[in-house]
Length: 486
Image (cartoon, rainbow, N blue to C red; front, side, top):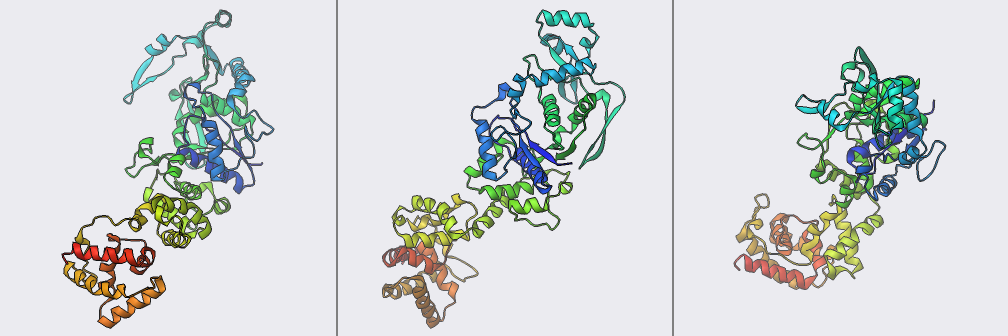
């Protein structure tokens, strides 16, 4: 049997990280077994439809490398792949009426007022449990109401007694009391199918063998299975993925600021790093590797290793992982990404190819996301005011007085230097330090502070000297002396 999986998003906005993980796992399962990966657009909820969201789905799948074999934009043998088009073709109505004929479903003509009267409090929530009122209507009564155009829905006819048992690949065998199964609506009053019914019909007609979705759908699975059984269809393999939470173990929400793929890209993360990170939200390879390309993931993905426990979205780990991708990137490709940021941050360096190249090389090994770059290099453009307390460093054995003395000694020496290229100035400065019997840190710490006004910089003192040049370096050192009271 050829494995066929699908990603079936609703075009309601940005792609949530959880939805991306569903798409990724479905893709990996199919690719690992040389199966098919389908895209189906589920747009039956017209009230939540967002203009442009379908194009966003296509773009996200392209950017992440999750190429589908069949779908609305590429076609295929089991289309249409957009549910609203399938509604127009009468597919769902036809199958719903088949269930009515089998007495596995029935027409319901109850008004909203009557439905509201059935609401009750269950575990602190207001829930409507339908009482099968319309199931007792005679065939003649149903035909009269339909002929008169009375608004109606079609409901699934679930038993109230006994149990329904189903199997999930991760959670094993799950047993549910049938008393908990409400007669869910299959066809709404507007003629559109509900999400649950359309899913079952489409998954069968499209030959889906493995269904990947969030574990919040476990409670609905018995209703799905009763539909499969009513039609006499094979039940697919279910893989329910764990919840994704934030660092406080609450469901990852839009308020977190990084709940969607688009949010993360806008924050400067690379698509391939996001895919790598999302793959590890509830799954890990046998060898516990963390940095993996999409091809690596295809090779080693085993859905049986998906965890049942909630997965924590560790933002700092994503930053680290993105940094690893940037470090491993070809320098030329990194420069294409970083150079526009550097030019905007340091306009004075914009036309100096040598300095741009050095700055790119400097930040590549240190940056985690591209928006970190301005904060790292802004001091090259302008020396901001700083607190002289940062001259004090226990390990370097420096304080404000010793730093003042060192800077006073260094200024005449550096005034005499003409060549400020890194290798030359490093050799000269190293010789001066040795000659005076100082430790490197005792001299280089106050020098770097005076040049940058920062406790941490993306490079050492001599690299800063080279990029600033002789005159600007000396000006900053004299300012340091002045701030220190010299």
